[in-house]
Amino acid sequence: MQRFIVLLVLIFSVVLPASAEEKAEHGDWTSQFLDGMGEASTHENGISMLGMLCGNGSCRYYFANGLDCEPSVNYPLMVTTDVGAVPLEAVCEPMTTANGEVMLYWFAETPYLNEAFVKTPAIGIAFPLTNGEFKTSRFSMNGFAQAVERMVNIMRDGKAQESTQEKDAPREPRADRT
Image (cartoon, rainbow, N blue to C red; front, top):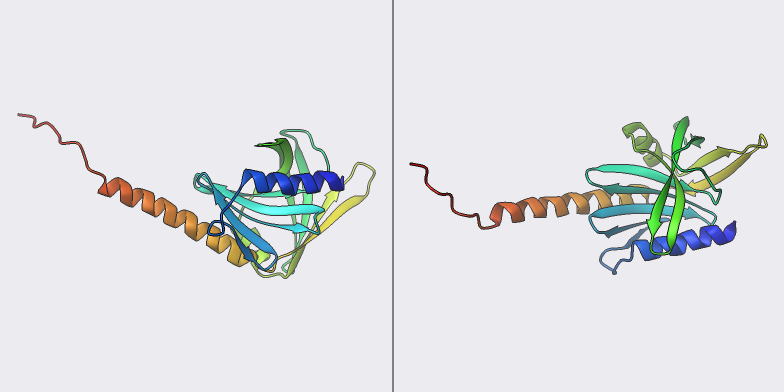
């Protein structure tokens, strides 16, 4: 199982390769970019990963804990913060990488969840197992706000630059209609 997490970390390094300007450390979090997508992420001592992936005008959180899952199946999670506990449903979806397919648990980004994550120094995620027990992960949120802010700002600036380039691009002359 630990091999899977180490492989996952290596895969993300391959999927989202970044130069020094594209990848930045923010406390226990990093932010990086590739092909119009941005990612802010952290890990729990190489065992589990938590991150936010943004692209095409929307963002989603992902969670990986080294457990296999069935594609398109919903799994319950309990996220604990200083603000309180939040029950979530995460959907298992594959992410195709240069080294093959990796299964991740994805859940929606919401203002309440974002605010809770900013207000707490660490979060816990409890994942129910079939034997009645829970697998738990704990993530430092030191640097979360800065990583997400950088990712969002750069992506917004990139989109702003794209729209500025479209405005400044030479236009084809229109034929007069008379």
